[in-house]
Image (cartoon, rainbow, N blue to C red; front, top):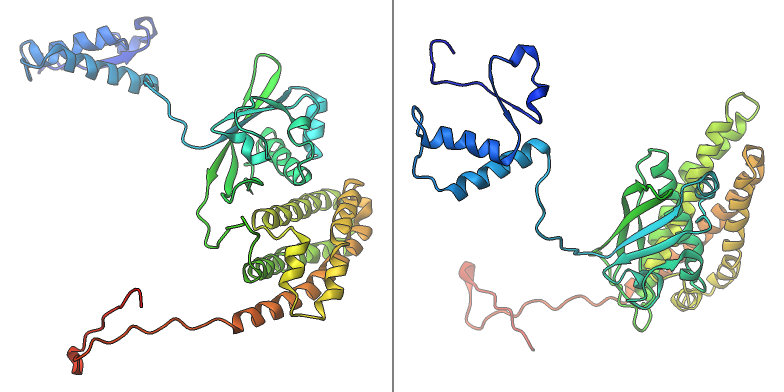
Length: 381
């Protein structure tokens, strides 16, 4: 610096008093718009630099504001644009609320609000304002599934775990949404506030449910869901239950059992959510899809026991690690139902695809021949 008197080392600071002794000899500039503007004025307009003396004030002022915003990590927002539905769930900040979330239930006093017609996700009229949770889901057939999944994600967030999202479809729409918790806030008013975003999804299958799904689509979804249940719940989690059951006499397995229960409960509710958004939670639609498989009638009658078994399994898991033998028995019963159902679903889907017609080949243009033959697609014929 002594050899080049025109050069300066500039230290930016929130307050000049914060400059320590090691930097006192240098040039300190407080990070304000006016101070940065003065520095830029010196660099661009004053000797010995005069980098660009004709630059107008508004350019220097805009640059000064950008430097201040970058330093402070903030920039003034001129406008916000909400492009997707979102929900805000508020609940009391207390031990009772945390205990209820740990049980995957919404605590008393939970209030739900949002923007962009969020009420449709729960089958409510738009523009109806905020709702207490119990009133919002009153009479809603999917309430138990989504109370579990939303409360679970909120509990995970409070425990500093990354929450998992879920998918939802309202009763009056074919649009499927990916619902994810993006942040939560601890309010000065002794409340927690959770912010959910619902993003519409493009799916690789039809969801035109105005007249109910066609049988082939129903069978496609049933094959997918039964395959998933087999691979995830039966082959993995049920196998883990059997392994853990063999270790039950060992010490320190309670944590493993509780974690296993959490995974099983989440997967069961995810399967239910998938059946809802795919439109195959309607027993009549399933019966119609199996009409060409006489042997499936008995299995369909057994499936009425599915939700009874699921609820019984959830209740047994809530009883704690000592219920592991009963959990294993119930899960085995559901696994056997799934095996039987999967076979019938695959057979019915095979029959449905036997009737698929091959698409017509393109017509050849008259007079074309040899390697230069051209193919013309004819439309409307």
